[in-house]
Every structure is written in C-alpha cells, then in structure tokens.
Length: 288
Image (cartoon, rainbow, N blue to C red; front, side, top):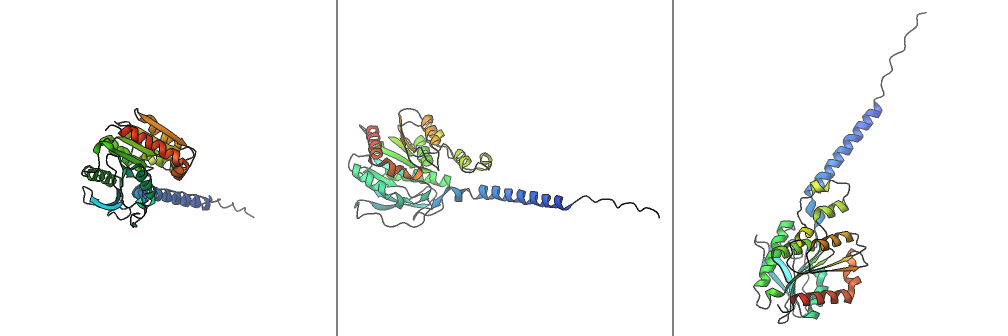
C-alpha cells in the first residue's frame, strides 16, 4: 500500500486576528480619547453653575448686583460691595467651579475691613451671558477693571487683585499688564500645561493643551507685591506649583503655607490667614 503524505499544517490565524482586532480597537480608542480631550478642553477646565440668587443684602445691605459688558459685547453680571472712603478695593477672580454666590463669604471679609469688593461673574457663570473660555475671561477681567476705574468711590491706586485656583491665572495676567497695589493668589498653578500633565499623565498634554495660561510667567513680570497661600496637602493643584509661582516672582512677596487640601484654605486658614492678608493689603496700599 502506498503511503499518503500528511497535509501541510496551516498556520494558526485566529490568534493573529484577535491581536489585530485588539490593536485596532486600542488605536481607535486612543485616538478618540485624544480628540475628545483636544476639542472638549473647555468642558474639562470650566465647571460653571448657571443662575444667580439675589445678593445677600440682609447680611450686607450695601452689596448690589451690577452689570457691564466686555469689549466683545458679552454682558457680565457681578456683585459689588462699595468701599468705605479711602479704603482699598478688591477685584476677585473665582476658581473654575460654581459661581460668585459660592464666594459670598468674601463679602463679609471685605465688609469687616471696610474694603470694596467686585466679585467678577465670568461669562457663562451665574447670570452672565456667553460661555467661558480663556480669551473671553481675559476680556472680562479688563471690563471689570475699566468698570472699577470709572467709579468715583474707588481709588485706583488702592486696587487689589485676588485670584483663587484657576482665577490665579487671570488675576496674574491682568496684574502683569495693569499693575494693582498688590496681588493675592490662593492655590495657584504654574501653568495650564503643567497642571494638565499632573491630572492626565498618560496623555501627551504638551501637544494637546491649547490654553496659554501661565501664572508663573505672569508673576515674573509683576511690578507689585505678591501674597501666595497654598495648602501642603492640595490634591488638585500640588503644593509645588504654589512654591514655583512664588519663586518666579520678584520681591516683595510673602508665602503662607497651610496644612490643608485644595478646598479647605478658607476654613483651615481662618482668622490668622484673613489677618495676614489684611496686614499685607494694608501695607501695600498705605500712603497711596
């Protein structure tokens, strides 16, 4: 009987198909994530709460709701506390979440000092029109400054800018261009790309981030005193960012360290922090 040769063994294709499918799926997923991050950056950066209650006139009768427009026509709604004669006025830049109603405690702090306070309502926040973006909020900052400069009860040489978290970037940018009597920054970040790299270390943020906010670069050009406060357990903006911003600024400057997390600065700092800021502001505005 004649022997029949064995049939040639076919290479296994199933595993290759699985690997190829997995690779394509992974690539598509990665590209999708990159595209979403690139095109939805504003959604990741800004978390506004729409709608605004009446200002707390029961506790602070002199506070009022005010409206003015940015240079591109966007209508902004803010809260205003007039200063007592000869006292400083604070232009306040909130963080990225909520709206100015969440910062009503600042009204009490400034009222106790006799200071004026403009809680700036960014575009897209509260009752302000439009939607938030970096360039637009730069315009909002300048509109707020112009509004303050036109008021007879505000002494231009006693203007103070106060930034909180994301607001530090906008406050410092305005301070570099239009110097105040002094600048106060709570939990500042070095720049937008650096903080994006902290939160998304698995993404090529240096390429993807479109924003140009650069707090450290801004304070390097300051021509006014700087006060920085940061929590050493900050889980949102690392403590090292606050130190880097402080180190980038020229003298005179003061750093205030707290043993707290990102959203605990006011509660943790309490009266000693408020007193330290008040002393700093009074010294910077005295004689002006």
